[in-house]
Image (cartoon, rainbow, N blue to C red; front, side, top):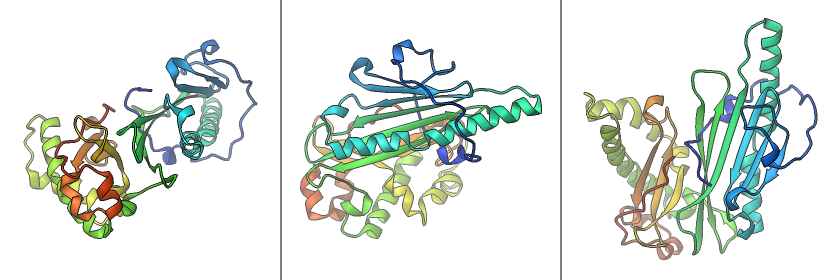
Length: 288
């Protein structure tokens, strides 16, 4: 189920999570609930063939959407998506309750918090690998929401999550190849996004790209597997960078596709057979 751009650092929102939930809530249908900005109870429903969960209190609301094909997924995969979607939910609500109490005690206005979570099936819809993209947007009373991505790549035959090191024979060599490819494509994307703002490539690299990509192995895990253009075969990797990683908040997220032809030589024999290594174009990622 597609929603607006969703990406939040829940880790920033769980400070003070020692507060307890004020009261338990009763399950009701989402159709009976007010919209997330209003006080809500917990709800489960199946709108438009997907799954939505709305929960909250007068202090906060949480709106979660899961892939429309959840019931058809491997049970282990579905459980992992649900676990990730629910991660941080209770802490977020507890933090909101604390903030609300602080506002009441301090005599200043409280702005209800909101967390929107959206998981969707992206990339190949069939075949040996699947990819799922989670987006999180959290508002805690500031000037704007905070965002983050979460990525889950799944090997169907192994019934297990796969990461960067699983795809490549030599992860360090593969990072060097991907770093060069990402840097080149990010410069082009930033140049287009900034509308020819007067900044040199060297300045962009020095200010944003090198700090994010150099000596940072974790950033290379931020990918989903994209389809080859006009095909259901895996055709490359799509990297997802939330705001503040590769640019200012105003620039928004960047989603950069790297076709398999770029990194074919680095793939393990198994995944060399899985990817369309002749692919030079990856189907456009979904708009965040």
